[in-house]
Length: 189
Length: 189
DNA sequence: ATCGCTTTTTGCCAAATGGCAAATGTTTTC
DNA sequence: GAAAACATTTGCCATTTGGCAAAAAGCGAT
Image (cartoon, rainbow over all chains, first blue to last red; front, side, top):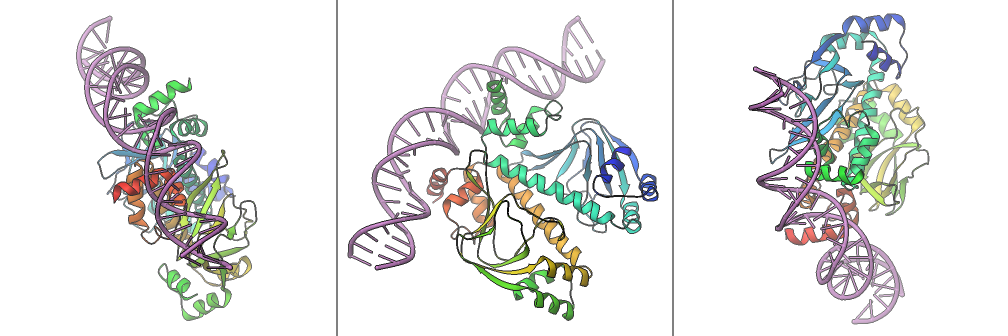
């Protein structure tokens, strides 16, 4: 919970009352390795913030292959759709790579926070925009690189993930096969 | 100008007064082929909406190569940063591929619209989020495809761009070399 | 129609990556 | 600690892509 508060405070100021409100609404939950947090086609009912663990976001392409779109690690918001009111049904899966701890808010409580704390919306928007931009930048960069560059980039940008995420997922994220990535790693050593 | 109004109305309702306000603030400008609309490192002073033409967004990677991140075509908002107040200095270039027509707003006027029209912020946010998501999805998909699939995907998703954008830019966008793309096209025929 | 300039295609060969299956290594379970 | 389950590496070869340079095609100005 405190991780979430600290995180939010990086993006805007909140007074004690406001912090208490947030604290009173958030609930901690745990997800075991390999459990889904979201499933494609199933309506999302909560807003989450990952405080511990790693989650993998993936979808199935038209050949039925599982493609990892990105990883979510500690201190990241997991939002559903643009607005709280909107019913949101993802087209991708979120699955825990390790055991995870999250702070979650029901949509109702989130809405209450939104209605009570002036500026909350702006804070969340800031976070969302930041994450979006980062993802676009990162994905775009990958495309112009060869396998080795992609991997070096990955270990540099996500040093804490390299040893916690199975090679096959990293390979999928980088757009190369697992065996190629294995060879690339050999060459780097 | 009317294209902009029509576009905005897809995302939210506005009354006649509000539309008139917008109309009174927007100015039409033209940009010739190969001119820059944004340059990396130069502060952006206006909000733009592309009504005609195609713009290329690119940056230089660490080898000094020009990498096309994406294309902007008709009916797309070109925003600077998260908020109007923020001074925004892009790290990429926007350059006209064809002659372009834009509707532009000074930051001051945009702010006035923002302060006058309740819900304007939400409309813009919706648009931005939509574009972001589309870009992330598109870029992610490319990564798991080979050259041929990338190109087929491109012509299917941007049929109007294929014949207006030089091959070298498309190749760069798709993360393959121009000669490879040329061969791919030959094989497809 | 011709010249000059830019864009696209092509040939040649090298390098990178994919596909598949077996071997090896690691972790979990009983 | 052995067996089973899972993850990673490796060998082998086919395919794809890259790099470079020359040729061909396209285009605009005169």
